Length: 228
Ligand code: CTP
Ligand code: CA
Image (cartoon, rainbow, N blue to C red; front, side, top):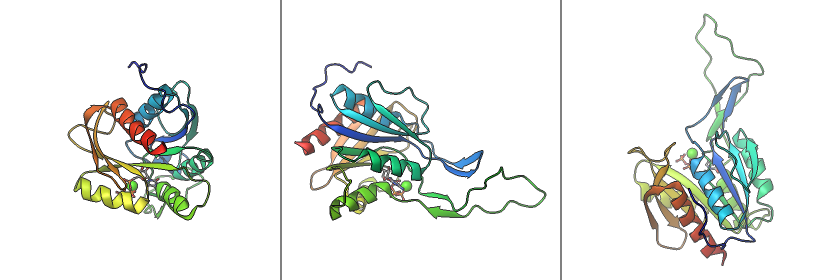
């Protein structure tokens, strides 16, 4: 897609984007993961670069070419993603958490490959991962640096999309929450997306089904507005 013809309205801004999905190791060869392709996060990175921004892309397990002009930091687990995002947001203007972060990880990782025996396998005990988006919101509320001035989350909801989304926006303390409608061949791994952007202290913005780059541009319009 042609990325020219965009305003340079993000020039001088440093934007941090997380993309893809984290992997939580069970043993050296196995992990708990999710279906995020990274397409939406990469579209956000390309469009931000095209609008003049300095972009740090924290990329978790994505099989896509590096967006030209962006600094790409590769991570695997939620813990690595958290460390990379906290490092990158120092001095940044906005963060967009497009990555699918695993909510849980195995309590213990086996140092060697778990072998099949005649017995039934042990259950995998899970523990909660840190909520990176909520942590950024908490830091901002408490004035605890580093935190960026504008914080954007993503959410995929299947039921009660608006009600669940509004509750999540408040819980996470973010400025914008992009709520994807999952199902009907949308969202995971597809070039198109349909969404509603929930705005803290404002009216929701409906984004019709279309290319992920169009959704990305609408998100940057809203971010640019909040940065002004
Ligand atoms: N997120 C995060 N850290 C986590 C989980 C989620 O930063 N441990 C971020 C995601 O990157 C996304 C937003 O929070 O921007 C919403 O993720 P979602 O999974 O929809 O929210 P959860 O609070 O995990 O709620 P749910 O029970 O619906 O999974
Ligand atoms: Ca989750």
